[in-house]
Image (cartoon, rainbow, N blue to C red; front, side, top):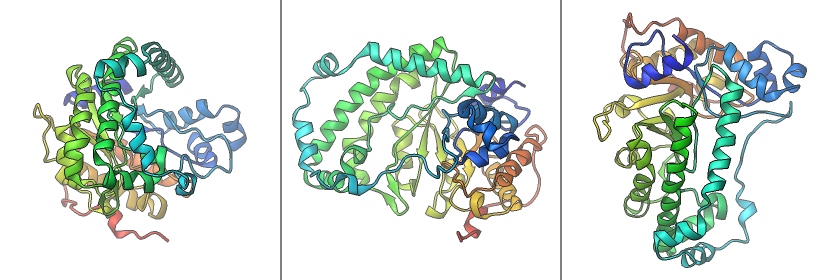
Amino acid sequence: MTRKARLLAQLAGDDIDRVPIVGGWSLGARNLAALGGMTVEAYLTDPLAHVIAANRRQGVDGMVPPIIPQDVDAIRAGSLQEEGFTELEPEAILHRAEAIPDSADEILRTRFDAAAVDAEFREHFSRMTGAMDDIALVPTIWAAPANFSLYFTYGYVAFLSAVALYPEAVARIYWEDGILSRERNHHIIRLWKEFDLIPLLFTGDDICTNDGPMVQPAFLRDAYWPHVARALEPYREAGIRCIHHCDGNVMPLVDDMVAAGFTGFQGFQYECGVDIYDLRTRRGPDGEEMLIMGGLSVTRTLPFGTPDDVRREVDYCLDATDGGRGFLLFTSNVTGVEVPPANLEAAYRHLTAYDPRVGRTGEKIVTPPALGIEPG
């Protein structure tokens, strides 16, 4: 099967020759050079092309828009430092809410630029699909739902304080953002068809810490999830599956995510109590089995385990998904520079050696191998 055909068959629930692999989230110029079988100097001559080459060499079928290390010493991508928001108070969020127009029509008339959206995503899809060639783009659009993550604009303290002090204001911002996201999504879907992208959207906000949701689930059910559901409706109507990125302990929010239109999950910090076996029991609004994208722990197994540990983690995911039904192998998040390339290679080789048409036998694996590995 071709890479794209394999992904399309997996999404449709049809027979596949092997479970698809997704790549794109790896840090470390040295690691990517090693995965690509080249020198660091060669990698740095064209980082985007060589990130894609490294993933192609590992046999990936699809890629999210990749992280592209440009500096040999870079060790992270994206960070939020609270000290950058010390001058902001929760009243900044209140004032923003007070300035929002009272009608959806007025919001769209004054705050939505269709031409800018079309230009942005046409350029993005063209650049990514052109660079990836036979590797399928897994479209990743963080702005597809209403934006929970106001902490990126105001910091955690101001945001969480505003939720406590001015919940109606926060809800009003989510209402506005849901309106803008829905309209943006209509324009994006027209381009989706033009570029013949696979019917899969990767999106979602970081809503949880290791202990659970940042704010009360009851608040989210009233103030947030209804606007997410409205924003994502165009994808559901177009037959595009939506996968939610999951950091921390998302289990208390899973039913809300499904009710909002998500029919798949990506990430999984097993040490926070996330259970793929449990996630697979949920069904979408049209009876869909949940898609599972991820499985390889970037907090434990990949950085601190052995190739045997990584292979067991792949087996755990295969077992949890009835031999790979609806499963796309991916990392739980961005792999750090401390991850040995040999561990990623071991995972990919192990999966490509498994034929889902034959099936699996052996002892059921009900405990994620990552739980037995402590950092250090």
